[in-house]
Length: 120
Image (cartoon, rainbow, N blue to C red):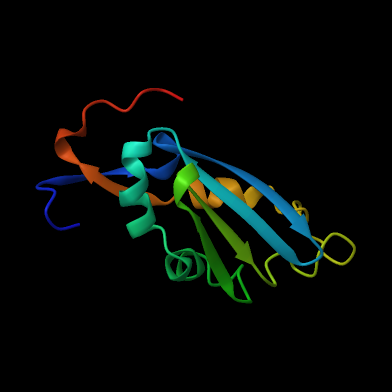
């Protein structure tokens, strides 16, 4: 990220939390930053393309990101993401709850001078 000096990598779960839902073979994950000051950097780095490319073997369909700027959140709708859905999948988590953990495990860059990241 330009204009912010030296950067360091942290796990997204250090600065955000998520909620997941599903319907059929579609998973929905909303990511919410703890500190509104982190929203712009998360928004810049956590794109639909990045989520899809991070898990190419799991995400078979399109990923769409919706921005909730006033609430400092991002909502991802992932099609063909649950191996057919609850009635057809043999996966352990056919309801999509694991998607929030997978997304929160991605790295993001924060300014080196950001200060300590509080424990969630």
